[in-house]
Amino acid sequence: MLHLLVVNYTRSEEDAAPYVRDHVKYLERHHADGTFLVSGQTVPSSQGGAIVACGVNRATIERISAEDPFVVNGVATYAITTIEPGRTHPALAELLTTTMPKE
Image (cartoon, rainbow, N blue to C red; front, side):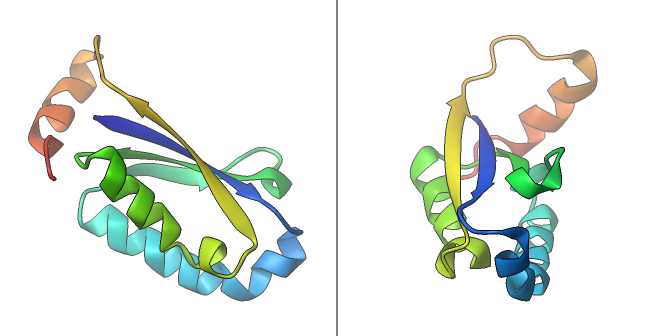
């Protein structure tokens, strides 16, 4: 399964600033373990960011999202959309096959 995680600031970017370093560590940890495939800021960045995650079930991605320092400190929330891939670009097919499932 894939999950699209949309990070929405509930407070200003200035309010989130003290937690950016810990948020980046959070992202790096989940990129390193293979759960996060892509992450980045939205345009404009004042809205938040987005993450594409793979290889974990819905309950696990909800738990991981709740651990984000932005969420823990009340400056952001996540909207999660879970996707069961039906068609995949050939360049992604092998990647998705090797990262699924990790429960």
